[in-house]
Length: 175
Image 1 (cartoon, rainbow, N blue to C red):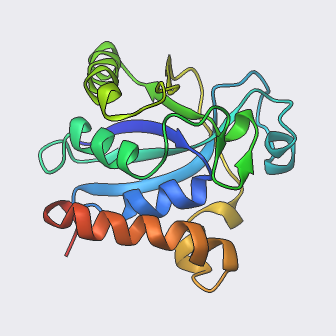
Image 2 (image 1 turned 180 degrees about the vertical axis):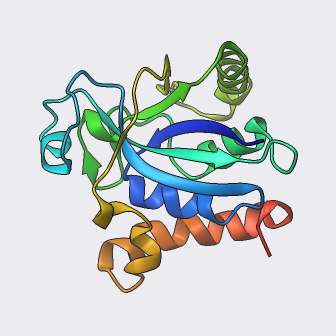
């Protein structure tokens, strides 16, 4: 039986690419969550007017990889102290957010953030909110890095995150 986790850590292309290499991750779907617009488009979300963040929904086998492992990779692949931005991407749609599926995930996320906080000079601004609704992004955004490895944005931002996961979390990477 699989479980789901939902994270937003900047551009969903980067977060998706980093999560996809993990052993036990069955699928990663890019989408939108955390806002109040029904069935938003990429253009609408990028405008910053929907309240949604670019997020990924990770379907994983908890017998192979735990939610705590996913949290560790998530926090290692973005800067949780940047408010409403990650690198060159600016706006609330790029905020750091954990959207929990149940109370156990909420408790784990909050405990992880509390334990991680002393490692940063600045305050962690990651939001921890219940997932109310996930909207799947348009097909061209699914597996974007895999489909567009030569894209300049992917080479500069997604590729280094994937490489970091492969190096730092080698024991968790699918072979």
